[in-house]
Length: 516
Image (cartoon, rainbow, N blue to C red; front, side):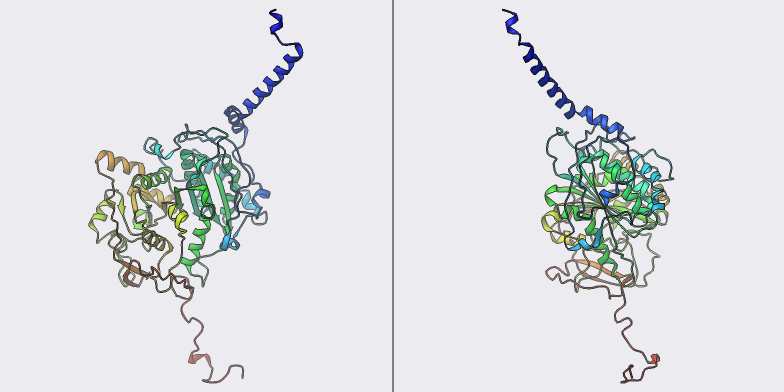
């Protein structure tokens, strides 16, 4: 009777077979196998030119599964998920300006030098380059920025929360520090939540080759990576610099603006110049934007080893004036005197406390994606009859117009444009982590911003360094007539009527046709 309860020998084989199939499926779906794959997968390989050279779209066409491996301990308790790939063409009206690096674009001799750069970028402990040394971020402070919980392996990915955008040209010297800090920030934030979009081109120092070779290593982190090149040259004679820079910035943002369903409205856009920046600088900007409920926050960038504020043409304070005094002569003799006519702002700068401004950029910014996703705001040049100014100033101006006027400077974050400049800048103005400790803990100062809801009625118009005036902050609202500034004479644009006038010294007689 007991023996009749057991299945026959043939049934046993069926049951055992089904059991093995189930065990095999469980093993394939488990994080154990994925962890094993991440161990044996190399961190860097020669770039797959065939994948890079597919010009049919500007996205990554394959999904890479693997766990983040970092020699730092920033992301030690973040479980990685598969990164969603974006195989979408986002060229739109600017598509002809972008291209995908091909074998012909990547210089063979320069490709031979990329190895140490990739190693340094991916490993914060690498000492091959004499780059800026950075402190470890305060993990507890930035814990709120990380994913609240890890999703099961087979659950659909949520919308991306962090979008890093850069325009990089001839800056290989700063890539180990700049990109190394970005990589560590993404490891901490959760790589599967991050997108890295870089537009380069025209570089002869290896920048293009390094950025192309990074693809495999970044994909292995589960970060979505876009790298494309453009021939746009803002400094080319006859070009309007602001118009061309606006185009480049919009191209870097294109993966977001043309795939809006992939991003949450409150996603953070981290737009960085070619600066030497630390991971705690990046995280502090992201933190302050969220903590202050700001629409946009900016660092402070410096020149002359931290003695001179760099982005003086762009910034405008809440009294409408520039951050530094520039007399009609165009002299920079007062460039050290920041916020000379705004005592409250100056005290915040001295105490490293956040302060509201009308406009800023300063080498590193974080702004929320909502104005781009919901209102299609873009970087642009000035409209007809609008004050000629930089594209970041106009971007902030458009934010105010749409009701996003919570724009602030975070003086605890200070950067320079190479490792030596940033090293001396931080020696003079402090590292972000040290400034936070001193202001918030040692001195017990409040970092809360008392937001003003209205912009200044008048804003300084400074089209160049020798012509200044005051204009209504909304001098072009409602007009929006595009204008070609390439013959304005500002910066590297042609001067009006240049090479069009005939003069007496040219040997021609009045009223006589030169053709005889």
